[in-house]
Image 1 (cartoon, helix red, strand yellow):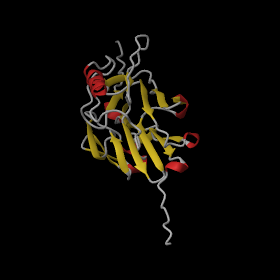
Image 2: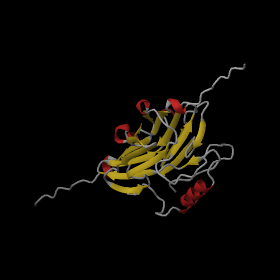
Image 3: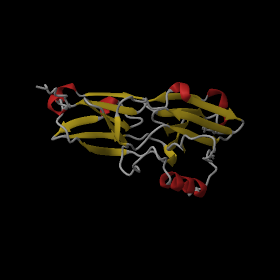
Image 4: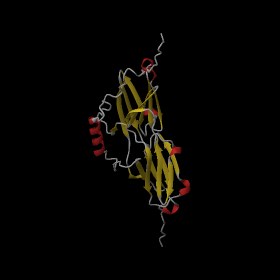
Length: 137
Length: 122
């Protein structure tokens, strides 16, 4: 049974891959060399961490906050049967994100949509910049 | 060729060929494709004769008033096509999208299923 006519080492695809990796769009600042890829943004009061983890339920992802770092852990399972092609990564993964600001541990919020994990970490009150009004005399 | 990545100059979105698993089981073939950020509405599956083409667009919610510290992924397009053989029952191909993974089930046509042949003792 042939479902996939390409050779095992699909050279054109490999080349495309290589060029995709080398000339990444300028919006993406870092190359992905760790799994899972993360995006980190912040505003005055929150830190937002997004991560691409397709095919994993939120219950199977372990999110821990300790010592100012966020740890995302999980396991990607694979199906059974005879594989014609396997490109999706499987197995245990872990990614650590260092947070250099004090955070409010009680109000951390995580949700998952379309394979994207979103973690919102509120900064602790003392880390939020505040305007101090100066009275002129 | 499984994945001819065609580059269009007019389009600014980066285009990727999604990671794919193809597994054969007793009843048919399961294709899993990692397409994080793709909602069901942004997915197009076309079957033309022997070619099954999958196109999708991943849109991440834009956030206003935030500064991006570190970015490793962004909006993109996914594109990949497969050639399927006559063994597949085209009428009953099923597709579902769950947690950013497209799962397609291509059942084997009745005539292609392995069958035990009874031997009659004569």
